[in-house]
Length: 420
Ligand code: 6GU
Image (cartoon, rainbow, N blue to C red):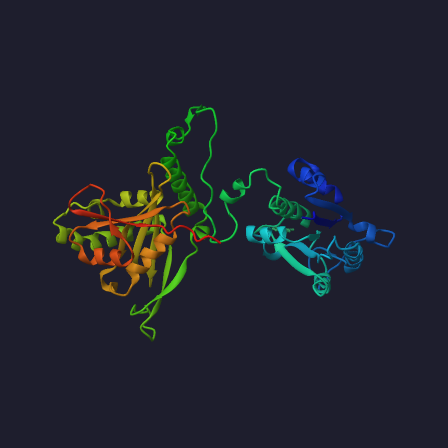
């Protein structure tokens, strides 16, 4: 493994002094990466060493001239590829770039040679990007929806994000996998809150479950906290809402055709009133069939439903601004290494049953289970034949666990991950 080469071009080379500190400094001394910072001004030829000029077409601010950039980038790119003739990647931080994500960081970490061009003012003459795009891979990237004064701060962030993904950078590679925005696959939820000693600080206690030593309880608590945070802070990350097509569902506007688009997303507090209505409606039949009027879905208050959204990962299906289905799941605390994903409140509006929406919701909530899940579990009334049939078809089998005679619990093991 040859060291990743990093070249940074800036009119403020001192800005990059912090890269000599801490883990990043060690990564360089240990040969994981080699970093060189170049002063753009040393590639100017005029007496004033000017790097900017007024924008063509008018407007506020100044634009970076292409000539110093061309000379500087030529010098860096011509200074030779690392062993093996590696192709450089030119990274241009700009608020007008594509979003710099963890996936992008992971991709950059695989490249042998990154050149970061830090612009100031209103940006770099666009022909610089245009020209180098014919010679190397060019990426214009933005950190997010805000503006900082120059590409330097962004370049520091990008370098930190990339460097820590280089093989051998972090002592414990597990810590990379577990954290927020973990690599690959679906966006991971935000991390759960963490605590260390002392157990009481300024009157605040560490959550008791973390001191219990019960690994099952701890895993379940952490998962719930992560889900709660993600739903609250980053509903876009939790499970980006998707649309699906359900046959026979009339489009609201009376559009042609028998299928309409249906939105699926994580439930928010504002969905609670409609969830309450739908669960009361959907559980009446279940109550009659099983001679049990006091089922929780019928007796819960609006506050109960609201509170449940913090405890369960709840999905709602909406069509034409109307809640037409829902399902929820949460990790149950068990002994040992067993982690059971409890699935419940699977409901479909009575006018929309028989279209496969229930089965779709069931597989959706199975897919939402965290990776450590070892089994899925559902329950229903003993006499709810329709539910029982659907669960059986989906691979669920009666659990022998003792319990209420009127309720049937069904479980399904999670298939072990297929080995590569
Ligand atoms: Cl990459 N550059 C600047 N100047 N501002 C930003 C940014 C980049 N990303 C977010 N804001």
